[in-house]
Amino acid sequence: MSEMQKDGAAVSLSGLRKRYGDVRAVDGVDLTVAPGEVVALLGPNGAGKSTTVDMILGLTRPDEGTARVFGRSPEEAIRSGAIGAMLQSGALRDNATVAETVGIMAALHGRPGRTRAVLEQVGLTDIANTRTNKLSGGQKQRVRFALALVSEPDLLILDEPTVAMDVSIRRDFWRAMRDYTSAGRTVIFATHYLEEAESYADRVVLMRSGRVVADGTVAQVRAAASGRTLRAVVPGVGTDELERLPGVTGADVRAGRVVLSCADSDATVRALLSRYPDAADIEITAVNLEDAFLTLTAEPALAGGEAR
Amino acid sequence: MNPRYLLFEIRILIRNSRFLIFTVALPAVLFLVYSGIFGDQGENYPDGTPVRASLMVSMAAYGAMSAAFSTSSLIAVERGLGWQRQLRLTPLTGTGYLLTKTALAMLLAVPAILIVSVLGAVMGVRLDAGQWLAVTAGLWLAVLPFTVLGLVIGQFVTPESQQPVTSAVTIVLGLVGGLWIPAEVVPEWMQTIMKATPTYWLREVGHSAFAPHPAIGTAVAVLGAYAAAAALIAARRYSRDAARV
Image 1 (cartoon, chains in turn purple, cyan):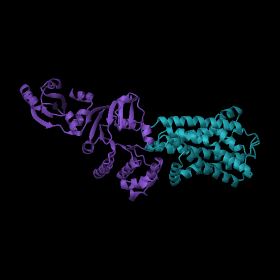
Image 2 (cartoon, one colour; image 1 turned 45 degrees about the vertical axis):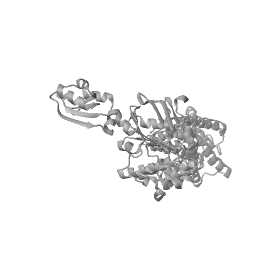
Image 3 (spheres, one colour; image 1 turned 90 degrees about the vertical axis):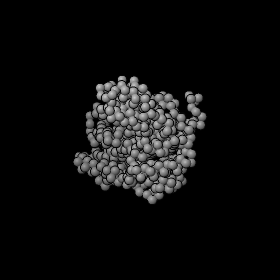
Image 4 (spheres, one colour; image 1 turned 45 degrees about the horizontal axis):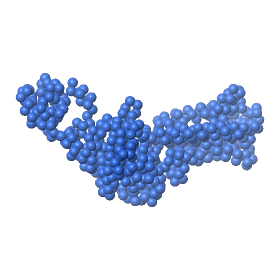
């Protein structure tokens, strides 16, 4: 087991599996995150992001495989204050003020003196004496960010941190995050906002159906689904035949139009026109991260169903 | 137990005055109603236990039990909020969390017992100082297993189901345990059933100050067994259930 884990990794997951009844929430995840990396865990709902995060935090025990954080078990890492996390759900108590909430978490970490510094760092000093149930969504999110920072963790885990924020607050949030990570801290954040992954992560890990389907820099992930997309109306032709065209890596029919993923769109378009002179309304576009994301996270069964 | 965390919880609870009043006031009102209805139907039960003092003990026991169970709703809500998950990301242990909640429930039981006792004195229950102490302190100590049972309920129910579940448990334990229908007036086979509940023995401890033949040893044994079993279940459940609710 230990030889599988790279020395000095901030997070090292090997063969991680978790099922809930018949659902394989996480189905064999191997992932190593180096100290200082900012990693986006990207994927649609139900991809297994939150379950993976829960296993890194020791909140969920894997059925198989291991999760290590700085070479220790998640529980040990939590106890030493090495992990800070901002979870998806509220996690704030009614009738407690901001200062009390941050204060109790600081105290439980054995660092009651941290309260004031964290409140300042996250910009909560003005509303320190406000009860948390009186806060706006963005303010609540900031309080939860403060809770994650209270132990000065080396690893910060954020599960869909900006989900309830409007655009400007979201930008402020990421600015605060940037300040924090400039000190060389490791961050893993789960999101389904592509632009967040693109703007703030050094590395993107794409998940689908409990597995990692792509892993690399934003540029690399985009390249993994590289090439171009060719759309056209081709009457009376099935996807099976179109897939055999030169340069085609995948074919699909959406809204009555054929959508071809092409490694070499020039070869494809020549062959398409010579074999199917009826082909019309041809459009060739470059793949953006969104397309890459859709391509890599699409459910195979669903794409097949649509093609028929 | 973590005293700082307990203090935090107490502060939040004090701000939730509606919750406090309801928990403490209902048994007091019930005591007044009951003693109005039954208080004059003779001085003593057939076995010699004074009726009014016994009613007082029953309602104080009911109040203490309600207070003890009140943490179940708090815990269910905390689980629903994700607060418990947030706590699991601190060095606070499961035992520390559960003991803090137990302490909170024990504190809540104090006013529940005292208010009914004061009303009892006003309504004409006559006990000497030692007996008063035995009734109040006895009930308070004997309610401990109920606080642990409250933890168990809280760890299993959802915020939506906690209210009916806690009410059902309270009513069943109160009814079968003889808080509303005294064991002194029911047939022996029913008494046998009553003796399986922790509530019967909670009341027995309260009675021991003035009843003719208190079975205090059995009470301690039964209540201790309930507390131990409930503690085991609560601890196991806490360590397993970290899921998002």
